[in-house]
Image 1 (spheres, rainbow, N blue to C red):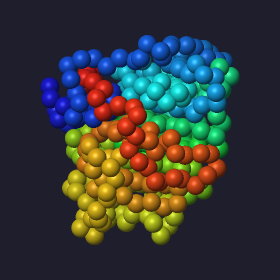
Image 2: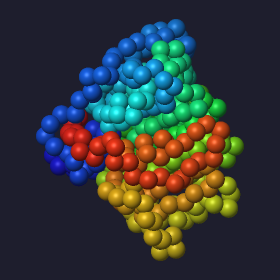
Image 3: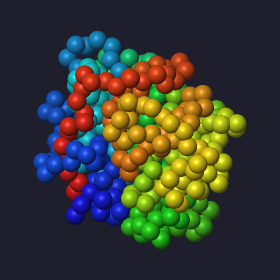
Image 4: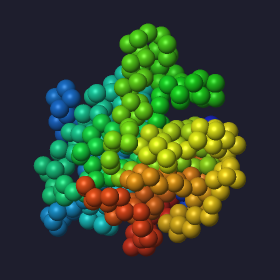
Length: 348
């Protein structure tokens, strides 16, 4: 099966982990040996929950990267080594929590248990490593992008910045798309929320509170970088509208995208002529930016790609951000860590 076919099939657990389709090989990715499996106490229900964990040997105050796994995956499989490799090279603390595993049960998918698991893993990292409280970062793609946006809204006071790629903004809207195009994912949402939208008031409330749309607003004054591939929703399972709607929720009224423009981008996988403008960003050299808009502390980029993340862009931007400071958009390519050549292989 080719990479294009995998993306069309919407295999979020595999295709979303393609750090770049240009570097896929037959070798399996693997977590670096320096990264350890540990368990920590979740305040959600006083259970021990698993996470991957790395701390630098120096013991000096260090940024913490909270990397969140994709929709159909858990904290171990498939590996997402780019996050860990960056942290090892940069001397950052790293966690990759399970937060109740794949989104196929009520305990996962933005539940209170999943939310508290992520907050508790930050507590674990702070107790077991010297974490700089001004530099605690969120990052994720696909289902990880969804949880990145949800956690940005649920606990904006905790993070220095959040980088969300191809994430889900509203579960109800995504259900409406997937029940026709990708019924497997519609079924997973039903398993998590207890039924289809409209089944009952309780079910509808689950869709609402588990969606970033319930929590993100312009009052969430957190540096947030939102990204979507122009082909996503066509060669991938998450329409561009999910990321563009998230930007609108965080942006000032005057900076929001018109609904007609969002519909055009989502339907046609192209940028309307009225929005076309040259965006010269060398950090996105492998998948150039086709459209970008900034509104205070939030930015949205539509890049020439699909359902994927460019880790070099996400992590280089996060590195510049500090808590309670305005977003720094002056990002330069970082050649000190080679993330481009990491081999990954799509698998079910």
